[in-house]
Length: 88
Image (cartoon, rainbow, N blue to C red):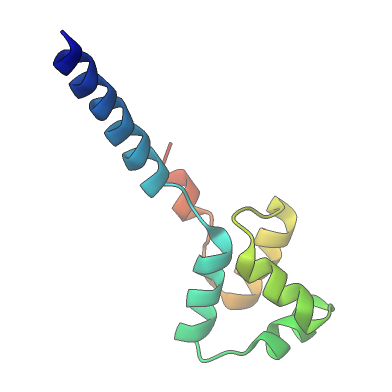
């Protein structure tokens, strides 16, 4: 009986790990797209009318305001929202 509980717990943990693996870390995706386009944080900061340090904060953020994400999507001409819609 104890072994069955352990296996059940392990299955629950595996489900949680799988769910965590599909979470979107939008900052990392923005950074990745910037790198692919050969763009630097200074450039994005200028486009967003903010300081370069704010861009680094965006890179570290797991989530972002929808309006800001829309603006970044427009600037980089890349649809970041599709990363979320794939999870629906």
